[in-house]
Image 1 (spheres, one colour):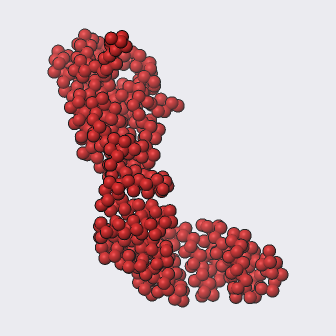
Image 2 (cartoon, rainbow, N blue to C red; image 1 turned 90 degrees about the vertical axis):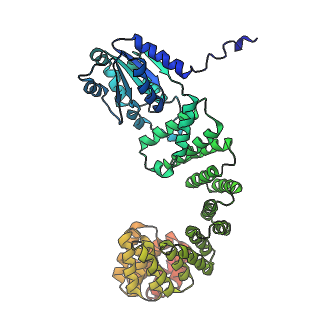
Length: 521
């Protein structure tokens, strides 16, 4: 036999019970101060806390549970052990003091790595500096129950304290525990719950997933579920690249997992990688053709790329499967409107409002389509409905002002623009169009002030510069008119020269040499 295989089991981890018994024997023999580090999962730690006093009944064992980050363990221990007879102190939860130092992206939190090379967590500095006090003042054994990543922190960032170790024990996880904990994480997986976690809690949860994925007793089916949920957790943390990587790993084991393809598409779209997102949605609907959400999101992504016809086809598939999906009808209407098919767009918005009568976005979009068709009165009624359901919807107030201005109702238009600006003070288009309404009422000074506000928020808005030039031209202020017209032309030469050559507002200065020179340049 080849000698390379003689010690084939040398690298295998010890059996869980054997590792535990080694720890028990060490603690039975030890008296006085000692430092023991036990690498285990939180569940295994809880089991050990119950079992150890039963197996070492002649020693007084206490448990200090840390449930939040601390910077001073010595003080916490001193307060805890006061008036207690202790031979062994089990400490669980030290990792809470380390989570906030995990500065890398969540996707890089992997087994056996530690992160912040430029600073040492306060708790570890404290352990290094106070180790003699621990030895001199506490004549009992410390047993730290730690995650694997915490052990690495101690090795690299608290070497003085760790070097005094009396022993390090790794408790392998049993197949039954791997199955139970994996199923728990998979069954309890909830995106909304992930969103509510703090950064430290998200890191803790990521490590929990990764610990289970690394277990030798893990099955392929459970790996798929864990990787999928890990992807969802990473997505909730806005770690989109890492989420995609997790979905990809799940799909290697189960290529037809349509949920992973769908969520992968959403993550890709958040990164602006729309073409890849569409390919991912294509895979999702290939394996689950009846997923209306995948068809809808596919349509949204095509829309983002300006591929409106394809987007409409995708929306059509979505509403074929789920006819009452109001968001899809609304999105479909926007794509139709982009193609100039305003009548069809209105019908699509009407479908959205049939199923969701208070959908203010659909009322507003319907108003825009009516406005595009010159049906201003109907457009105003539609905007009014939008504002009935969402009174602070600044876009609807703005659009309503435009329709009122088209009808020559400039005073009402100004009031509508004022409402838009009340809710969105930096809305430069509203300031500009408010100026136009004031200009129509021959209130030129107020119009100029409104244009100035537009330019405060959008200095390269050529329309506002041009509109100011018109106001000054009507006031026979040739110098100011030409100065503002020059800026407008510099920003948009073709359009502004076309306007200026035909605009009657410039009649009073049209013979001015500077004006002529500007037009001829």
